[in-house]
Every structure is written in structure tokens, then in C-alpha cells.
Length: 194
Image 1 (spheres, rainbow, N blue to C red):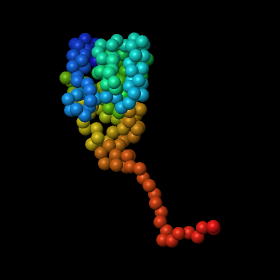
Image 2: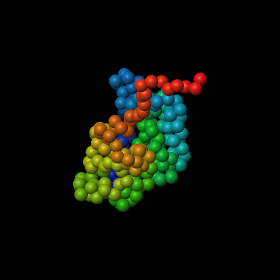
Image 3: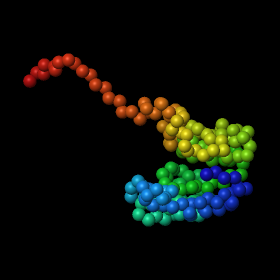
């Protein structure tokens, strides 16, 4: 999450407060906000990303530990390009807090990311948010809204590694996720030479 430096400390405090109170556990119980990682291999990969990021200068604000396959929601601050959790998609419960001072810097940071599937711009100025959004290298941009819940009904793809580089979504997903099979039929078996 890119956060303007003027609000970064307050935003961080609220994010840490939310992260530390999210219930983690058996996803089937219906009593948790965050279930387990898919397997031990992914848990180790994710933990390696977090630990490497801390060694590279990110500051652990919350989380960073796990029990079984359940990784606690993690908040890292001081994240920037060159830190592993910024440079690659960790596929786990982490919020990277990246501060910026100008709109140009925010756009440059966002476009440095390997992602590109979706972005959100939050601002009291719709004009400013639109100007920023139009400069982002992202398949879809939400202005003053979250980046989940409607993607599956709209065409999207994005230029980064998070998408497939094209425009898919809605009815086009049928073709995107269909395994085609071609079957030819003749009305009689061939005369094999044996």
C-alpha cells in the first residue's frame, strides 16, 4: 500500500491495530478472517520472503510468525524497491507500507512493481485520483474503492505478472479456463496392417 508521508504514521497505527486483531485459524470454522496457507512449501516460501525483507531493511510492525500453516497477518513498513516483499508477489497475508511524497513518486513506485492486475487510488479529489489512475500500469483501477469483489464480472488482465497480460473476465473467462478437446469420428475403424 502506497501511503502519503503526511498520513503514514496514523495509517500504520490503524493498519497494525486491524492486523493484530484478525482471527486466524481453521478457515472452515466460519469464525476466522484468515485461514491457513495452502501447504508447508508455500508457508516456508512466504516466511522466507518476510524474513528476507526484514533483513533488507523493512520494519516488522505486526505478525511475522505462524502456528501450523496459519501465518499471522503481517505489516511491514519502510518497504521500497529492492526489498523482496516489494519486488515479488509473496502470496500470503502481508501489507507492505510504502511511503511517498509526490504524486509522481507514487506513480513511479506503483509502476515499478511487477504487479499490474489491479490498483486503487484513494483521494478526496476525484480529479487528482483520475489523473494518477490513468498513469498506472494496471489492468483495472478503482477510484476510492477496494480492489476486490467485482473483478470476476469485468474484463481484466493487466500488464504485470498478476494477470495474464490480456483482457479476460466475465463471459470471456469461459474460454480462458476451458480445456478444449478436438475429437474426430469416422463411421468405421481403419484397416490396420496387422
